[in-house]
Amino acid sequence: MHPEVTELRKFYGRPLGGMVRRLLTQRIRSRWRTTQSGAVIGFGFAVPYIGMFRSEAARVGAFMPAAQGAVVWPTSDAVLSVMLDEALFPLPDASIDFLLCVHGLEASGRPAAMLREIWRVLAPA
Image (cartoon, rainbow, N blue to C red; front, side, top):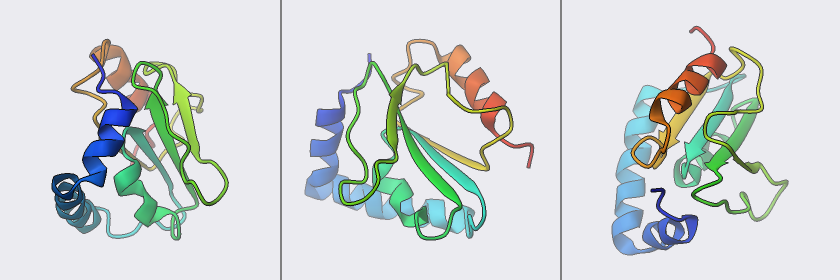
């Protein structure tokens, strides 16, 4: 069962969620030093983490599983979020350079199908 998007948004709005976001953001950035000219997708509820890439990546998007629900993201600019089936990404093969899965795998109803779809859209590098 997916945690609902409203619960996740509440968690990240609280002090503990803010601390988790800060700690994980530092670790993500240390591994993804630059995403310049790349395509970045956040899957699950990755919006607390992928915003930092909007100014440098060529493309950024948030894919939210239909069972979880979706939020409009970002709220102050063109919408970059979409609600979809966790095993049917609307992307061509090998089109994504960076994919961050947050609250996606542990809540998946079809983890093998979801991981195959992630593998399909990720670029070889």
